[in-house]
Length: 213
Image (cartoon, rainbow, N blue to C red; front, side):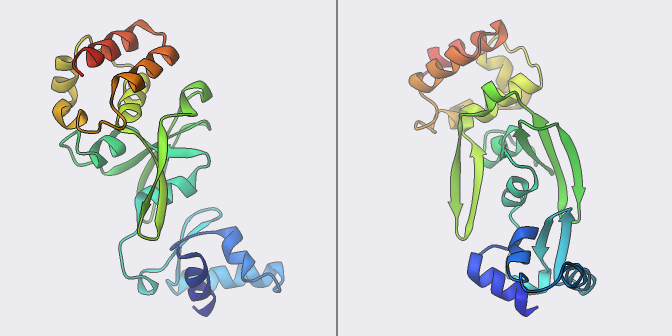
């Protein structure tokens, strides 16, 4: 457990990519590294999330795992979006049990010992903007802005909302709360979206949102 404690104290993270673990075992042979990982997992000192990604075991930590941090590490590049982000901002009432992200890689559903993760493919023209990094204590993760999370949802779910009322009814979306995120939801941001998304269905709902600002 000493090695794991050293890594945690050094990097302040309970999400451990294999390269971080190996950086503390650099003097050991490949076989010794594999044996260490196997023993640590058997003892519960490490939890294997997927190939190349581990978590500090429950006994070696004091708080719950941050699923958004895990998602960012699980698939690179990716950022949290869709239902998980909308729920995070308090814009939809339903509990979200799968951590949802978007990526430029092939979409996937991944079941892990610490929950279900979903990654939806988003073409690079739509991926490379509209997200930012949140610092939550020792944790850092990338998440879509409220506007981008909503647009990602409309694009990927192929929704055809003709008005904000339809959006509110279908998603039970809290548009009043949405408008409180003035840094991310304003006419300039919507105008930027209108330049990127040329499809009629996106143009219609974005322009209706803009009218209500």
